[in-house]
Structures are given as structure tokens and as C-alpha cells.
Image 1 (cartoon, rainbow, N blue to C red):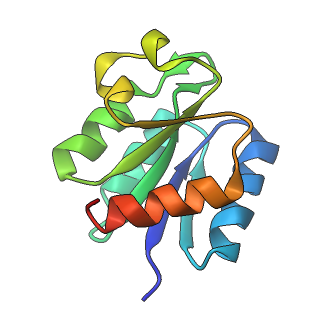
Image 2 (spheres, rainbow, N blue to C red):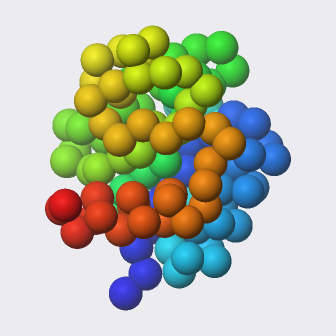
Length: 118
């Protein structure tokens, strides 16, 4: 079974790199979504995703609403950012935080662990 991963990233080339990494690891990619509204719309789908990769900042705005929507639905997520965990809002800092540039193998490994409930 292929797991569906929502990608929320506003930088086109980074979003494409994440999508290609996930597809190479056997995941199905939802998105990428460059805006909070786009990501929230994807989450309204009856079968939105199994997990998400969430950029902490989208076009200068916080992606905290997406983080909160994921948490409310019980969907695990990874926050990717250039910020340190201490610079993030508490709900984001409580998640698994990976720094950019991403290590593709680490991202796939973390997502598999989150989906497995580890």
C-alpha cells in the first residue's frame, strides 16, 4: 500500500525535490500546496493524506493553521524549516522538525516511522 503524503511548501524547486524524493521512496504525493488555503482545501478531501511534510513559513505567513488542522485530524506531520525548533510556535516545535536542506533518506525514514506510530 502506498501512503499519501501532503506536501506543503511554497518554494517551487524545494516542493518538486520533496515530491520526487517521496515518489522515489514509494509514497503518493498530495499537492504540493504553496499556500495555507490550498493545504486546508486538500485536508477537506474525504481521504486527505496519511501524513504531511509542512514548511513552517509559506510566503512570509505562518503555516500554523495547517499544523493545527493536521493535529485536529490526527494526521502526523514533519515540519521542515530553516528555523530552529526554538523559533517555531509550540505546536510545530512539538513535531519532528527537519532542517533544510533536507536529507531525502532521513525524510522517508521519519515519515515511515510517523505513519507506523513510532
